[in-house]
Amino acid sequence: MKFMKSVTDFPGSYVANACTSEGYCSYCNVNGHARRDCEQYKQKKKELGSYGPEILEGRQDNTKNIHTDEDDKESISSDNTNCERETVSVLLGASNCIRLGHIDDSVVNASISGGSFDKIEQNIDLAFQKTENKDIEKVVICLGTNDISRNKSDSDQINLLVTSAVNRVKSSFPEAQIGLCNIIPRKGNGAQFQKINETTKSVNSFMKKLCVREQSVAFVDINDQFYKHGAVIRTLFDKNDSSGVHVSTEGAQRINSKLCEFLNSPNTNFTVSNTPIDRKRNRSDKTTPTSADRTSKVSRKETGIDHD
Figure 1 (cartoon, rainbow, N blue to C red):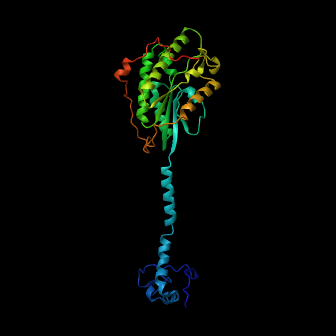
Figure 2 (tube, rainbow, N blue to C red):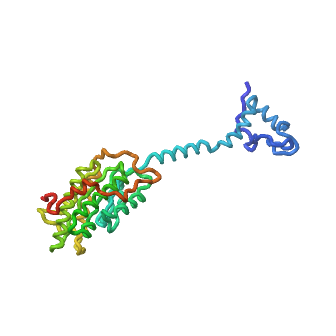
Figure 3 (cartoon, rainbow, N blue to C red):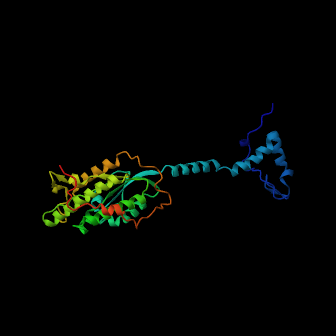
């Protein structure tokens, strides 16, 4: 029995290419004869046996397809990368939320110094910049101190701003569960601080009622963390801040703790479809409260939630 020799037994430089000229041999690379008339080519076919032509022609095909398998692997890897999108939560806040520092690897802090309900679109834009190619499961709104500063005695106006901001967030993140934090009190003495905290209590009462009406919005009570026996805990605020707005390290930890309670709670509202790759979203700059919202404004005499 004759044993056919392996292709590897022969010089690899002999690649069988289609004959392009009768005066040139593509097998031995010599001018003057075609490959079919080449004695070396005839001898090689004879040595390889009946499968010689297929083996010689196959060398060219293998050379052309040498990267095919690797290309397929890269394509599969790329497809898997596109499918495995990271899921995160987003925090929309102001300077006190910036003081929280790192909350969790799965939380994107889109807080802005000076942020407010009426400028929440800035937070939303920042959130989309920071979460490109990520799916957003939960969105926390933690604003209001700056709105209180500008509307010290007008809780009705702030209620309208809160309602509009919630509608904007719902429109921008339609599949996400939203957490609405109430507003922390202000540290300080005198009639001005007392009036600010009365307005804060009134707005917080409205926010709690709003969350009852809105199925996708949860109420996150951070205000309660800053009271003890009905009095503001002064050590939770920055002692060097005369405005009484900014929290201390301990105050930031208390806010962080309440946020994590919400972020770690089950979310039955989430489906992986809320952040398309092209990052398009529905803007709602013209969103305004409904007539029902306008007629259900909370009286300034409401005291809000009782504190232990």
